[in-house]
Amino acid sequence: MTIEQLLREATDKLKDNGYVHGEREAMLMLQPLFDQDTAWFITHGENEVADETIEQFTEHVEQRISGKPLAYILGTQQFMGWQLACDERALIPRPETEQLVEQVVKQVRDFKLESGKFLEIGTGTGAISLSLKKYFPEADVTATDVSTEALELAEENRARLKVDVDFIESDLFNSVPKEQYDLIVANLPYVPTQKLEFVSEQILDWEPMIAIEAGEDGLGYIRPFLNDLPKYLSSHGIAAIEMWHTHADAVIALAKNLPHHEVIIEKDLAGFDRFALFLPI
Ligand SMILES: C[S@@+](CC[C@H](N)C(=O)[O-])C[C@H]1O[C@@H](n2cnc3c(N)ncnc32)[C@H](O)[C@@H]1O
View 1: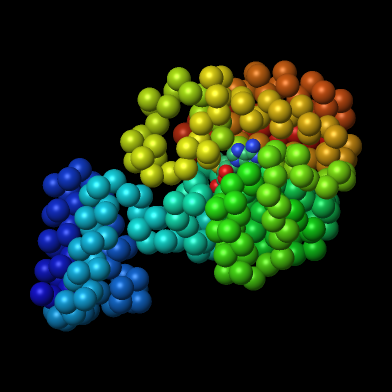
View 2: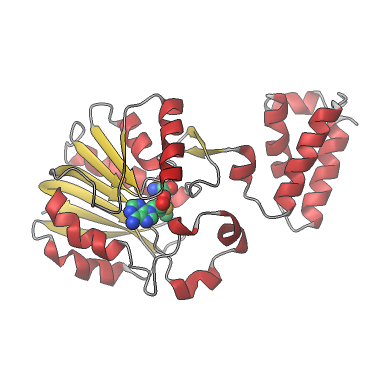
């Protein structure tokens, strides 16, 4: 079978199963098996494909049809331009979280905290902390997660990105060194239990529930996080979180215990209130 035939067959199969971007997804799954870019495939469509490669590719297409996210099949996900290792041990980093990083990068520059002490709670793949360390090599970055598996993946990504971040296993702030941080960032689980029915099956079936569900009101992690935040955030430091789109008022109310900070709510690209920034007044 030729490359072109293989791609066409896979595209049809994916589209028949409701994957509207079947063509692109088929190409993304084939590329790593050849280690070539899209342009190469356009000019080598007539090449015969080895049986072994056909077998591997067919298995990936079947996995995709069964609902497995592309990032878990490929074993990688782009985040802020870096290629992170990504598998079932942690949540797939999302474009919204890239927006969170962009906003944090801007605030770190505005408040001149580039060489400060940074802390992330709930790091998953390590996406946020590793990106911040890339942007601010002078910063001292610590990141936590309660999941040992997620931390193992984050450590693999630390090696990939060749940066120095301290990873600690911790339930929220419980094992975090009692110090004052210049930046504290968190994308903790925030989906209210009763809203899980609106989350896509693909997410619920494949991504770790420990990264998604956050109790009846969805504040099961953000509430204790905000309660403890004043003990760790320096008075000139900044904090930032990602949140469920209806939680802005609750978050503003919970942040009343931060007397030296104002809360700014920012929207995601879909226009939903998604981020809260805590900035020194
Ligand atoms: C929504 S995911 C975000 C992961 C990553 N920061 C990102 O943005 O892609 C939430 C993360 O918080 C972690 N987590 C859940 N409960 C936690 C807790 N009590 N303390 C620390 N981390 C927790 C999960 O394991 C998961 O990695």
